[in-house]
Image 1 (spheres, rainbow over the protein chains, first blue to last red):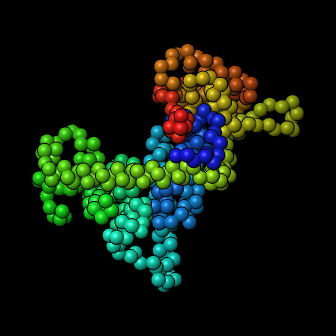
Image 2: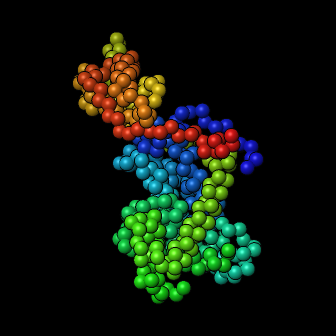
Length: 192
Length: 197
């Protein structure tokens, strides 16, 4: 892509360090190592938050909160090599909290929540980008299925990590994931 | 495809699980079934589409101006990692000087970074560092570039750590324990940079 870079790359060799080292150093108070983690996984976390929230408005807040929590809790992370899925779990939690707070707010206000329109195939095919279509289809999934699927496909968490995060047995995670995939697959037939 | 459908005797859940295990160990009753193949290919297509979208969106996010990074860094506090106070003697009886444990860990990392191809990770000061003269053991984790000769790097690192500790602290260092936790492979600094070449 002929994009001009909007910022100078970091000159630090830290940029090439493995996750484990960066997480260990950040846990010990190395802000520069933490900065590399922020740059390495921040963009993915931002996309994750925006997919959950369906908008970019609150993404900055959610990702910032996530990294502040991460900085505070890094010394408790036992395996620094797992920092990516650990960060993704934090942003997943914060995004869902935000979503719930928003829904709660809407309920109290008794305003007309923008009811998810039933998507007609032509709309999926033409009016929306694939990302928008995917976001919409995801939004229609039951919350546990959606969280499960996103932790698996976007965050690349293991079944065990997802089970721990959602406080569910692994067998339930397996079932939720399969149902989410099945629904998404049926919807996807529309957008080919 | 109805939800009640069994695909060659397999549930959709089994197939989904099979996909996540990278189809390993191979199950001939799945691999040999056209219905299963269709379902698996559908799931793979879904995954590939999702990954392509994700990659595109993450790239767009990576190209944004990064004021959000500085906002985050400004919001975190280095004090959270200060640790214990380590006294430093001073001729005046009324002056009290100290350096924080966090600062000493920073000194150890910086000393380690002066040795190429070995990276210092966690640093620990074991012992009563707040008591002048109390024996202290320094424990350091490190990662070594694949292919390097580990013993000679460790010798160089230990030497550099001793010098730095001696220069900046009055700790009675009894031992410097270095644990090589892992080997690392050189990672290209930026995936983007290599594709631009």
